[in-house]
Image 1: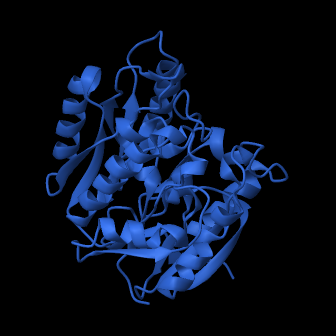
Image 2: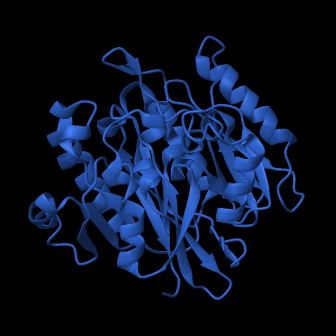
Length: 345
């Protein structure tokens, strides 16, 4: 039996959370290990404290780090640490996707994980994280038969899902499956009726185009899209194509989509490689949004992003965090986090 048959569905990310899970970074798995102290001591510590302003947080740590990391948050009553050994720290992608049924009962999907198409070895511990989280919280587990990462999908909670062809149809994930088979499996395991397929993710995104850097629902029938207005930038063609797709799309309820456009931050590099800067990598928390901003040359687009999100979500507090500290590792706030909806266990 799959979640659809059992009448479970993936709720929208803005639905009430019981808590947020995230995983503590591992020096050995970092692209730039010399930055470990700055990344863990600045970004991760600040992120946990920022989320804790809104809701409880569980930090997944390797057993060897449990005492040290627990001590960092000893003064916060709503932060705890859970010992689960892992290879890398992007819990959005290897963690469970939580589900709810009509009775408000929680369950979770355990997707197969292969480190974004086999890019980083080893990943065996990461592939085993989701089942342990679901066992820890005591909810039903659905084992999905495909490789997929949580950052590659976004749902409106009313039957419509956003994703990209670049990622979900990439042959480094499920080469034996057709588009139709992948689509059918995703529909079964998050229980959606309609999938809106964008073409590509942002230039330089090593996840092969995760949608959480490109677009997300702000509400049923309303999508936020990061756009580029400079024809010389690789993201110009990518984002304009995705904009055309969204403007022509209808959701599972037959609604035409309202599209809110966010201007991308200015081009930036680190060690000669393009950084995938995205305001769309924000994270919904109870009563707020945790928004990565980039400062410096991006100060103006930072301001515009804050204003646009404040207008789109007038009942939420926009809590900013320095997104430059972590982005050289390839992700940001949304990639780091995984929400657990409020529900019965």
